[in-house]
Each structure stands twice: as C-alpha cells, then as structure tokens.
Length: 118
Image 1 (cartoon, one colour):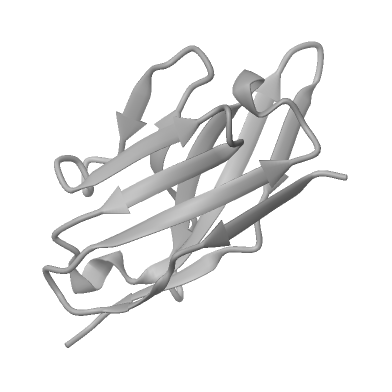
Image 2 (cartoon, rainbow, N blue to C red; image 1 turned 90 degrees about the vertical axis):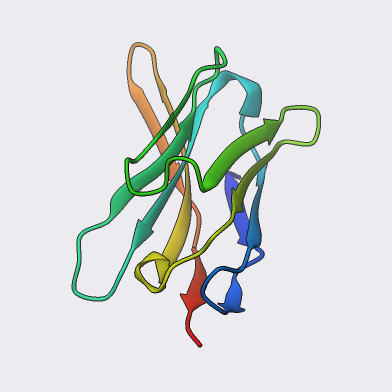
C-alpha cells in the first residue's frame, strides 16, 4: 500500500523557518521524482520544488534562494527546508511522487498546513 505522510507544518512568523518531511512507503522511493506542491485558498495547486530520481533539483521562482528540497533515499524521506518565510507562503503543502515508464505512476500525500503570520 502506497503512503506519503507529510509532517512539519505549523504557524510561523514572517522571516521564520520550517522544515517539512514526507515519509514514503509502498513503492521504490529512489526511482521516483519527488516534489512539493502547495495550494492556497482560492488558488490552484502549484509546484514548489522537485527532486528528480537522477539528482537534478528545480524550484519555483517564488521560492528560489529561500527553500531547499532534499531527499534521503535510505530513509525514503523527502524534505523541504523553508527559510525567510513570507505570508504568501501560507498554503497546504503536498508531497508528490511520480514515475513515468510504460505508464504513469503518481501518488499524493494528504498535505500539511503552513501558516505564516504575525
């Protein structure tokens, strides 16, 4: 059974930091592209950062220089270090796993809420 479990969200003041974690099970984690998405109320879900199985990293322009995505394949865990948080970073953050071979495999976590407010 595939599971993606996010943790680490919470309430933080502007300028603060949080580290999100996503623990995966039920599929070969190291072979999947892993991503963080977020969705704010009334807005579409957007890609925040991606860690490809072959090692490349990418970020949305809005978080470049502030957020860092990383993964520990031995622990089947994806991380998102978020620094210099802004109110506009407030959203539900979701972990995503994706692999495309002869068919596409896509899995989502339940999400963790990040609220940036004074």
